[in-house]
Amino acid sequence: MSMTPKVAFVTILLVSACSTDPLYCNERKECTDPQRPFCDLKGQYPASEGIGRTCIPDPFATGPDASPGQDSAVGCGGRECICEPDTFLRCEGDGAAVYCNHDGSHEVMVACEASCSEARGGCSCEPGTSTCEASTTVHCGDDGTVSNVEPCPLDCDDSGSRCLDVDPSNGLAPYLDQAVAAPALVLSDGAVIDAETGEISDGDGTRVNIASVLLDAPAGGVAVRVFVVSSLVVGDTRIPATEPSIAVALVSSGDVSVQGDIQIDSGHADCAAGDGIPELTAGQLGRCNGSGSGGGGLGTPGARGGNSNGLSGTLLPGGSGGGVAATDSLVPLRGGCSGGRIGLFRSLNDPPIGYGPGAPGGGALQLVSRTHIEIAAGFLDAGGEGARPGSCVVPGGGSGGGILLEAPEVVVLDGAGIVANGGGGGGACTAGAGEDGRRSVESASGGVCPGPDGDGGSGGSASAATDGESVGVNRSGGGGGGGVGRIRINTATYGFQRERGAVVSPEPSVGTIGVR
Image 1: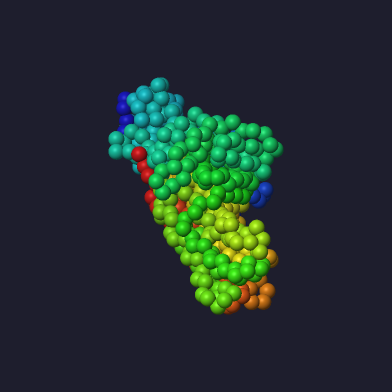
Image 2: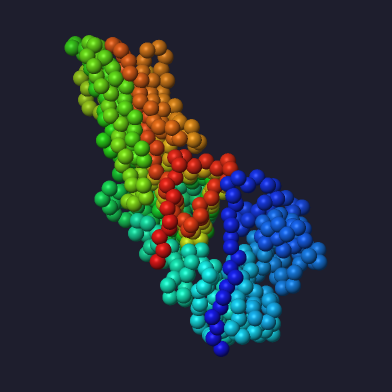
């Protein structure tokens, strides 16, 4: 007998950004009190007094509080699941059956076309069929009973037979399709991901074999190294800079959990930040002054370099800041831009021999998951570098880079963060190094110099980047601060949540995830 299941899907609500209740828990936030280790998602056990998402004593340890059909959950430890995945639990009256979903996170009620039978194992259905309704797909096994119940975080497709799938940006759908059969990736603190070679080293130096492909750079973007995994857990990890810049994409069929700092460096990318102007005495006798170079731009413009009146009183205008260089959606994917350059001299008794690179911008990272991305601890950091000091033409700070997260749910927990702030501009003295983009909403400081020498401008963050300091005769102007990068988060409706104490800077652009 066939059936058209009607599913009472248990809606999953993520933690509110304002939640500070120590007893609060949800599908991703575990209970840490050993006296109250069990998360009662639905408020069904007496100890929670009817309040869902509450940490309570383990109801299975004592027995009386356990409801019928729940004994199988003892094997889950009372923390990660409330029932045994993909099992029939009980009949609910004559016309409905209750099943445990695929990961044991909640129960799902299915309306039977006929009646529910405990002996039969729930509702009868047409073997080998799947029906999707109310954001849940019910799969029927060869024996004519429900084999598993699959939640559809992105709803059902138009045919009513399957869940909608994630369609990631930047052409990564073919690699997401491969991710189901890929290995899981777990990286310990100290891991390194080499975007150029595709090699991954774990924290102990062991090489990890994960398939990858290097995609050519599209117009306006950079080449992208794509790694394919079934799930991802990552601790402190570095993605070193490459020349030219290469972005990294990690594509996962299952959950992504970031449990440490991921530092995303970039190579030098010239995005038209202006250079300062040097001036030397006619005899080239070791006296040199000039204006400051501009800061790099990406999500916002970089700041201007400081003016100088050189050695002769002639105005030497500071270099312009780099302009906006990335789309709001980070399609194409790209990292940050370098600040304006520094003048190069063999010695100050010689003519200038050209320019050296300014401070590099932050790198680019795209994380994709079919299910859930959680920044549990540490920071995704694509901050721009602070400019090193200069004595004649002073460099500008690098801009922040690009971070793109795509999953039905993206959560940033208290104390964790996502940052792509700009670096500080250089100061016109040997001690005038600008700060790297900070892991906060505060601006990176520009290089500070004593006396009348020009200070560097601050990098962009929650506040705009600032110009390098302008100076008078016989002094050099400071370098401009780097602008912020881009943070883009694509989820299902209301799928992005951050707890109080989470840091996201600059403020992200939030969109709806693509589906197919």
